[in-house]
Amino acid sequence: MPQHSYPVVETPAGAVRGIRDEAGELYRGIPYAAAPIGAGRFARPEPHPGWSGVRDGTRPAPTAPQPTRDFGLLDMTPYFGPGWIPGAEYLTVDIRTPAADTGARPVMVFVHGGGFVTGSTRAALYDGRAFARDGVVLVTVGYRLGIPGFLDLADAPANRGLLDVLAALGWVRDTIASFGGDPGAVTVFGQSAGATLIAALLATPAAKSLFRRAIVQSGSGTGAFTPEQARRVTAAAAGALGVAPTAAEFAGIPDERFLEILPALSGIDLRTDDATDPLAGLSAFAPVLPTQPADDLAAGPAADIDLLIGTNTEEGHLYLVPQGSLETSTDADVCELAGRVHPDPAAAIAACRAGNPAATPGELRSAVLGEALFGAGTTRLTQAHARISGGRTYAYSFAHRSTALGGRLGAAHTVELPFVFDIADEPWLHGETGLLGPVPAPADLAGRMHRAWVAFARNGTPGWAAYGQGRPNVEVFRDRR
Image (cartoon, rainbow, N blue to C red; front, side):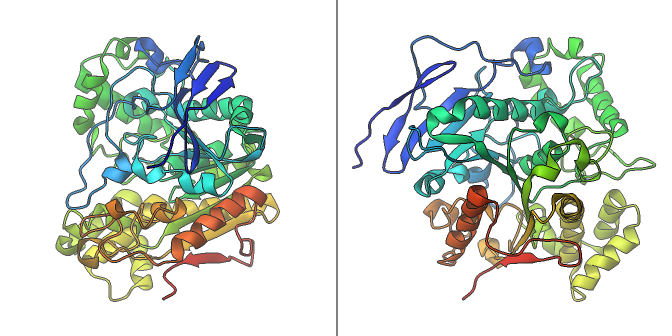
């Protein structure tokens, strides 16, 4: 059995005890902001008051209030984690470091996904041992979700979940040196909703100087709600709760009640005269912005940031295959979806069909969905960043097909994560209902992908040519066997 010891690190807020093991040192549940309680759930994150004595950082923190999510036949527990673990202090970070010394190592800050309503630092997929092994300090961030995090209220600051991530990055700048990290070499990266938040950071003035590089995995530069769309969600939430649409009214309602009304917010028609639904009805929450990040990069730090960005080739499969909908989808389903997510539904369908002329209705529906949720917004952000960054944009496509669910899951949304974190050989990711399926993962794919992410964090280049005008280079990750 490995022998553990319990190192103690002094931070500006107080001392924290972690655990040292064969992978380095791990510190869990360190608060970067005060607990969001009562009316504070709808306020800006405030600095944590600190503590006396030595804080126990060997145990995971509570998680943000969130519903249980079911993905049918697919076991998504490694992605969503344990769900809601109640407790006030969930605005916390976990840190994996080779050693809490003066090493000044590159820092990677991960923002989890989950549709802006679920997820936490406790998800097994975000195991940071491989990053610590390779000399990187990994920080994973918890933030407010759902109504406290993203419901737009006139008397509350907007995008509170995004403000939490900004606060966490400020904490990293001021504190990470205590854990052996270099505050001048921070890469922020995320997946899905977390990646969409990073896209928003690239266009946020307050994010300037907080990070040097960014990685956007299956996110979108066009995933924000317009103020008009946000008002529809707010009105529906207030109606379901029977209160006025103000933070003052919402402050007295318990988190349990917020979770109870989430089903009433699903399926809201968010199409307006000038916008389609960027989340295709899958979530009622997103950042709320007057312009899309991909169209407003000059407002934030994007021009000075190295960007690594990409998607999976069958993103939409995650939302159809586990429920059996890939086989049962009809042409009418494809048309309904295209009408929700695209201003020219026929053109959207034709573009996807051109990429796979023999596609079944289910495959076509998956392609339209993946393009709407991630593909189009990623392309727009990639091109916009390439125009302003002077050759510091790197694009990838993840094409490895999971063999889960009879081989049908394919290169679906989230399948790249075990490869980025270099844990694709973990038994709990395999089996017929495991994310990677019963067939062993390609022996070298996780190593190649993980090394590219580490190299990018270390020196700004993942190992292939940059994406630029007239040279749209895209690195494809697939099984080389």
